[in-house]
Image 1 (spheres, chains in turn purple, brown):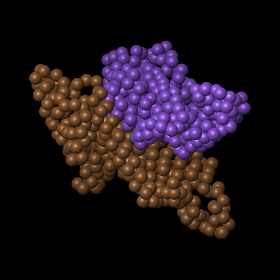
Image 2 (cartoon, chains in turn purple, red; image 1 turned 180 degrees about the vertical axis):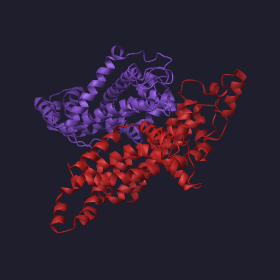
Image 3 (cartoon, chains in turn purple, cyan; image 1 turned 90 degrees about the vertical axis):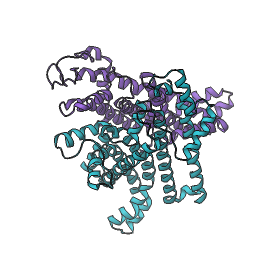
Image 4 (cartoon, chains in turn blue, purple; image 1 turned 180 degrees about the horizontal axis):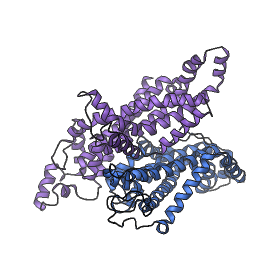
Length: 291
Length: 315
């Protein structure tokens, strides 16, 4: 959904790395973002060790308030909210990262091929990308889940496909502007294959805007997964995800406010931390973005 | 300008045709037999064959496509196959004004907050005001809309009991009731939009304020008010309008989710219920209408952009 304004950028050698460090030292928000994200990543990885209860274990302590045994209370079936949110971290982060990884590879390949070869290849690919571009990513994901059905794999496919156009557009316009550079000409003159020219000479120079777009996309993917789960179009009814916990708790918020508050706090903190990091990367990599 | 408008218009029609075609063929790829779903697995082979003939599903897929298209142009989108067989067009006609009035109210509230916030933080760059606006913008961008909706219900409906938690009243019945039902969902949807626009206005305005013609205008001795509203703001709004176009899509996708929290039977709720009930004709109809809203709001923004910025028209 974001559109990265494109200027050919520097590759990422050592001096770029020192720029990361220099900008990070002044960026309180980015520091905070990295810490929050690290905490959630660790919490997700070590959820089985950290969770005091089985996330699906029902007890007779139904809709119990905050206590030492249940730091975030329990839900209508007596399940421990803290443990459920911990396990939800895994789904959220896994889907957020995996979908963007898939969309990135697919989108970049399409964009590079379209931009480098031009002609009818470009026409066919870009007509499709333009069609997808006319729709918000979340709506595309909803349409795709409507066709393929719910479940972990389908949700991942739906969200990844929804993001492909963003990466394809960036990769294509970077390729178009880089195609005319002398070093690309040189590579071709030396008789390097198209594939080698594309991936060894063009791609590394298009990395900065792609990194920024990928970071922002992870936060949109996490919000998208949560929304799908909340609507009942998510992974499945037995896997605790943040969106699903909120959907389950929605009917009980008048008696148990914690069911409507804490899962959302988790989503907000993760998305906020990624937005902070994205902002810092945009500065550090000097990528201009329209919003 | 006319040729530009014409080109954009034709482009939009082609996109709509492509979407309709995709929707038609993709829903035929759906795993699971819609006929079986319609008969609730109760019919024998004879009933299934009869039903297929009645719905025209025994003919080739291309004939079906032709018939479907012809019907669609007459406003016939088929009947719901879930529960009472209501015509899809009737469901959509009832849902449409709800989604539109919700999105427009959200848009209005968001702009009323975003424009002054953006101007304030650009003119008082790096002050307390700027930082506060920036913090709220970050929070607004990071809160899922449906969660914000739940929080608003907990505070204003459940605890303070100022506003209704669910439902909708048409605007022609009672303006006040309409507003009371829509204000919470509109805030839930508009917050992220408002954050994006405020940030955009800030950065665009900062760029304009540093430009040469602003320095010229200042050296002519214009008042600060004249500088801001006569010179800086109109120019700064040009890129903002494109972003509004892109972000308008956010409002509609927000409405799709948030309508479900507030039990407002708009297009979003129709779409999601259709998917959950495997009510394919309803899903088809809702997808088409929601898509049409995007395509034509994009078109309007593009045309508006052409009017405002003469550079666009030339190519």
